[in-house]
Length: 297
Image (cartoon, rainbow, N blue to C red; front, side, top):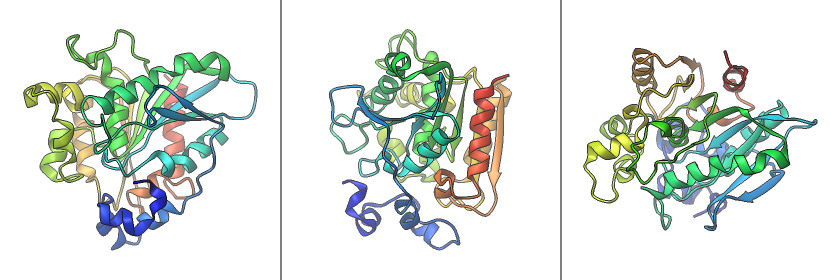
């Protein structure tokens, strides 16, 4: 079900946090869907499935450009596509950062969930290697940026080097970022399931080939795949009705204990969806975190 089907259909499908956010003086689902969706410079496949594509937006100038790999949220569910990240992607490109916004198979799509969702974002990210020369991309300056469930996937991408070699998700040379920026991310699937974040979606992500739950967590839950070995920025919203701020706080503690550089920001007066709205007060925090990661040590 594409976003174009309208607000009523999305609410009926259970858009994450719709009821909670509508009761606060913050951005609603309707506001999110009303954001501009500027067209990308290029829409490029990274596989043969119709959902295996990315949208590339390029800054002006000669390059080479730093790159933000963007992963959209929506509780890993099929109805929620990459369209609502278009405004954020275009805003980052206007700031001099090329953006590669990934679509991927989700829960409810054929092949979505484990392992397909993870295979897609991994393959899409690694596809940057084949795009770099033609589009003047600097792969020494890459940041993974994800919102909500996309924050989980952005952190998971950074954790891929820790996968066991007998995992179907293991890759010999995954593309490494300078760091990760998670916007109301969901780094701990066991915690998310316990808190009821995204309903039963975290547990559905842990289903698959019958492997023990502990083994599956070690393959797909970033909190169980530490340390990441790269800087992490965790941005939360003070009035988030979808992902509690405690999720980021506990993950930041784990990162710090294991020696991973981590910074946290809580944006006052905003909710879950403002974090991807470049017209909101959250934009300056998001932009600053992305710039800080790309600048490196």
